[in-house]
Structure formats: C-alpha cells, structure tokens
Image (cartoon, rainbow, N blue to C red):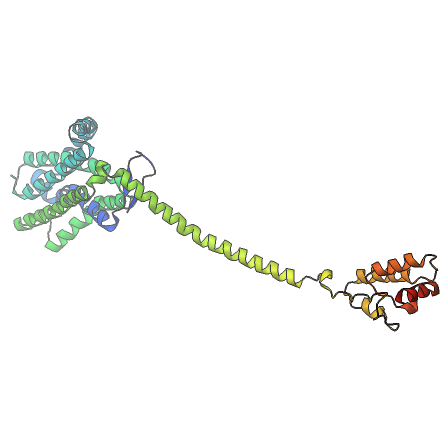
Length: 348
C-alpha cells in the first residue's frame, strides 16, 4: 500500500510495508546496537582484566570516533550519490555498516585479550554503527511512522535481548570460554538477520526508492482516492434520493387531501326557457344545495334574489335574456305576470 507523502519531495511516496517492514526495521536496529550492548554488559569481566576505568575508556572509544564520521557523512554522501545514485549510495552505506558489525561480532571472542585490541575494536564498532545508524534513519523516511517506531524499539530492545541470552546461558560475572563464544555467535546471527532485512527492503522497494515508478504509483494512489471519495459520497446520494422521493410522496398526499372548492359537484343545468321540458313545479333551491362551497352558494343566492326581485322590469325581453344567460334555471311560477305572458308567447 502506498500513499503520497505529506511533506518533502513532491516525487516521494510513503511505503506501507505493514508488519513485515516493521519487523525488518526492528532487526536492523538490533544489528547495529547488539554488539555494543553485549560488550558493556560484560563490564564486570573487563573491569577485572583492565581496571575500573575501562567503562569510561569504552564509552570514549565508541562515541568519539562516531562524531567526525557523522559530521563528514554529508560530504561523503554527496560523493557517493553523484557516483552511484542516491538509492545505491544509501544501500552501500547501510549494508557496509551492518556487514562490519556482523564481522566484528563474529570475530570478537577470538580477538587477542589485550587492552589495546579491545579499545581499537570498540572504536571500529562505533564508526560502523554510526554509519548504519544515520543511513537507517535516512531509509525509514520513505516508510510510515509505524516503521520508525519499530526502529526505535529495536534500539532500546537490544538490552533486554542481551539480558535474555545471558539468562538462557546462565552467564555470571566470570563467564566461561564457551559461554562467551556462544553468546557472541548468537548475537552475530541476529545481526545477520538485520543485514538480510536491509537487503530485502532494498530489493522489494528498489523501483520506488530509485523513483522509477513514482508516476505510476501516484496515478494508482489517485485512482484509489477517487474510489474512496465515490464510496463515501454514494450513501449520501442515496439518502438524498430517498428524502426527495419521500418529499414528493408527501406533497402528492397533501395535494390529494387539500379541499378544493372547484372539485365540488356541478350545478344541474337550467331547463331551457322555450323547451318542452319546462316544469312549473321545478325548484332551484335543491340545485343550490349541491355546492359545497359557501362562497359560491352566497353568490348564486344573491344572483337568484336579483332575478326574482319583486320590482317589475319594464323590458321583458332583457329579463328573459338575463335568465337565458344564467346557470340557474328559474321556474315560470316565480316570474312577473308580464314576463310570464312573454314566455308563453315564446313557447307557442
């Protein structure tokens, strides 16, 4: 799994190696710290051989040579980068330091037991360990934070690991020869595991570290991000569609339940004035009662009262014309006498 790095070079990506890369960085840290922890754990043994000041001498021999090495590593790194490339330079420096620690650990119990040999061996170990240490932290920048944590645990976990080996071998303040050889060779095997872990990291992620697949990886990361965005937005879109459908259904229900005065039953058509179906007993009041709208009932009642007013209309034709244009039929029994005679003439 690869993700774009948040800071640093625009071409760099963070490598997610998961648990495998975490364990490999753990053993890399064990590799460049194991021998130093093992030597200092034998302080009682070396104090009896070389005096009480041996602890100070060992610390000076280990740390003092590493200071100029770390200061000059920037210049040496530029030369190696120009000659071999950044990734190859990093691999050479890290594996050289780990391989030197491996050789020193495997050969340490067979070195001459002299004060000068011990101090010289620790000085060489400090130089090799400093090179491996600085290069490892340069490599871990390509990986996620969990790998950095694994590297730190390896640095501080070397002490408990050495203590565990001493307990298993039942080593005391005056260890026997076979115990010294055994614990150093077991530590050399652990350093070998760290060296193999370093080689496996470079072998597995060489194209990424060298930048050969940066564009391809960034394209894959972009596609994965788009898929994640779509998967996150899809539930929201489904919710929006559901809400919209519910709103439409509720709106249609409200539309059906709303009382509409125009959906009331229509009035019956008025019988024609001059037709044969004119019924003197026909009453207009039931027709008015068919409507369910009070406003329409009042308006039609007012219109009916105007038509059947007791005030005579001097123009029968105009009154009958008004009756013919209305939507409410008026029986002849409600007409004025002059209007009734005119209506009779029209019927004949």
